[in-house]
Length: 205
Image 1: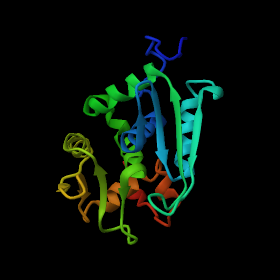
Image 2 (image 1 turned 60 degrees about the vertical axis):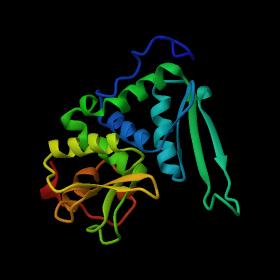
Image 3 (image 1 turned 90 degrees about the vertical axis):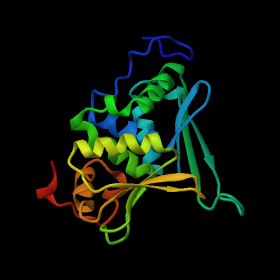
Image 4 (image 1 turned 135 degrees about the horizontal axis):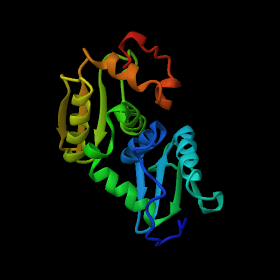
């Protein structure tokens, strides 16, 4: 198996195979990093960096992984940030193709793990775990793709808002469906499992 930079072999990673890969795909779509031949994740949460690192180690040897740590400063950065990445064009192509074709790449049984990754990367909810549940996107097409996936698993009251000043799109989950959403992503979400949220078992599908 040739995983070297520039290799044309792209058969070593299939995101439709596992729940954990579906989560990683959502996490990368939210906070992913890529350049000409490198693919990785940038985040301030060490747990998410560790989780992405563990995924990379299932595909590539440890010496291929590169980690950068950005210390807080007095200007742009208030918290320490981490950047984990590898140089691997085949894996980069896999991730980019996945992001462009989420609607057809994520199986029905993997929608909630994928959404958990998206939520951990770019999602939030109010402290009451009831209001202001949302996922932020950099463009409308990605928000629409996730909107469709959520419709597939029974959501009916989502809305997408465009914040022109921030140049972002937010997919909001209705208060009537927030507990259902959080309960179903909870088994996969690092963010929720570190919180005091208690899932409703009777709502988990």
